[in-house]
Length: 243
Image (tube, rainbow, N blue to C red; front, top):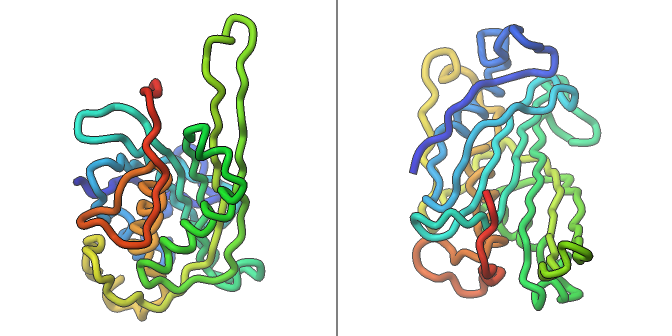
């Protein structure tokens, strides 16, 4: 398992602009991003930095992830994007200075896709992943979309497919989360100027770990470590998807 690496960007930067991870960035934002970069994820999750949106907040950082099968299996089971937004002045709609935004999607087996309660179940997986890590959050908002595709003409031999998509955002609390019962992410200790700053950044490492839990669950993977009672995942899909 490898730690995340990447760069910081803010909404004002263009090509060749000043790196928002420098001395001009708010210390709380630097700590939040440093925690994201230090997370170690399970081997089925491939996690990489990606260019963040430029106009949603003064400061932003983004990660994208792909969940694959067992070791050596190149089949993509789920994928998603997680964006950290920060506005030091605060944002009325967020009720805070930080916001996490996500897009997650995966293909489904036909019998699972037909379940009328699937959207409610998928939304409960998101909130359950956060609560399972002992995280406090506010102002959750989002949609769950189920889209079916049927093929005709030269493509008529392909089986119908259904994709589930979760778009969501929430405000992470800046109160530290309690240590979870199961192994959590490794986070680097703050040093220098950041170590002297008072708390004010949310536990973004734990939020990222919860997001990876959601990705693995929608991909149909069992929980990491021993099987956990009461946790239901989507069955793994048959047949490989081209990468």
